[in-house]
Length: 613
Image 1: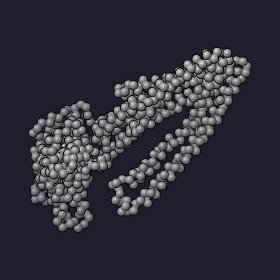
Image 2 (image 1 turned 90 degrees about the vertical axis):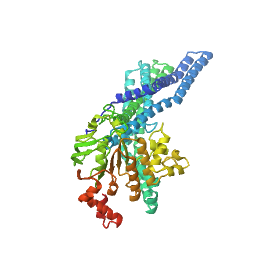
Image 3 (image 1 turned 90 degrees about the horizontal axis):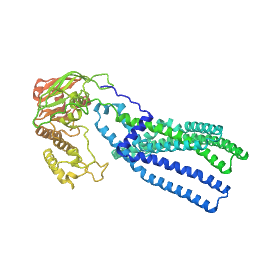
């Protein structure tokens, strides 16, 4: 399997990515960002000029009516802009949420469709987990980035305007303002970034705290907690992690207090220099009182704009890092043909021959190969049983046949065509399977059988339920096919027994109506009698289809046309059940051990382990 590729994204690239997302889905987001920034700067300018202008008019002995008109004009302007700002604030979040939800949909689709080897890769799993962080709430990068971009735009416009206002003042004052602001920003940002630099430590504490809390609330652990008296132990763990979190927070608060002290001292220095310099100019007759007030206020505003620019670019940088984790997962290079390739022709009655030719396969990060130069042919319509102890390679064989993995060497062929040549998504349509860890969706029984939200065929589903032997149970439910499943989501959900769940899986398999059937230990949790009944139904209902059965219980292989015994990644024996029993050897030996377990009881743990893996 090829190595996972690493991609890097710049801050500008991530901003452009979000702009494109908004432009394609909710264009109003971009226009509202610009309008919000312009209105905010307009309000700031009106508030800056109102007092100096009024003071100047009073100094020049303006009439009362002129002053009232001037006050009214400023008041109306400020109120109008504030009303526009409030209206934008009320409506700006809808579009931003839609952009974030659009990214969530993309992420869910990507998570459900990317190549199977990537799904089992620990690095990709880590990427996937991190990719949700920028979309986990309105304060995260997937939505908050718009507020940051608005603040940067607003700050840049304010900086340019205020710099223009101060252009006639000494360069010394501008440089002092810049120096103290940048110095204060650097010191406070470094000290204030302590928690960010220790985020992994905090994340580890939070993970342990919420894990412990979650186990205490988990219904699955309720019996063990009460039987083994684990309440006090869980309580002690909760207290421990809560205390560590308080200590961590206390360290941060002490450092933030130091940052505030530094910021205050630099502000006193900056304002003292500005006030003294402008006051000297006014006393020398170079400034009027109104001009002094305007410039002194402008110095404070100029400082604020610089600080905001620096702060928001820092915030944008952090948000860019979060967005990078999202994009790294979305843009992860595929290992299989997912968009192009051959589309298999699925026709009723068409047979499919499966061949593994000189196959060698080793899992990533593993030194020992599962198979070396394996050859196997499954003729169209044959029922093949695959048996062997744990770790023999049974499930790996199924993964190779289903196209979840590609061999490192050799070929897997379907009707003579290499699986690598197929469009992998279309290739999966050839298969219907029931696995040991099957999936149940939080929805109706009909949804779980049809695996489709819209367009489910109720008559077909009822027919499949009848063939699976589940009609009586479904009819006993108040809502029948519409009964809900999964109590973690629906309080009124029904709970089926193990055998009933297996019949539901059989109904799902029949509904899919695929030409190749795969059963990987689907009845491991059932007793031998229930398993026998389920397999008898599989035998009847999958007649004429290429079928692969994996089971630890060798008795369940009797209805198969052929059995292969895998050990150490090799086919040790093959043939029909009766044929293998007559030959003796490893298969017959394991069968006898299992038979003894059911008839007399296995005498030793070693025999049990050998019989069942």
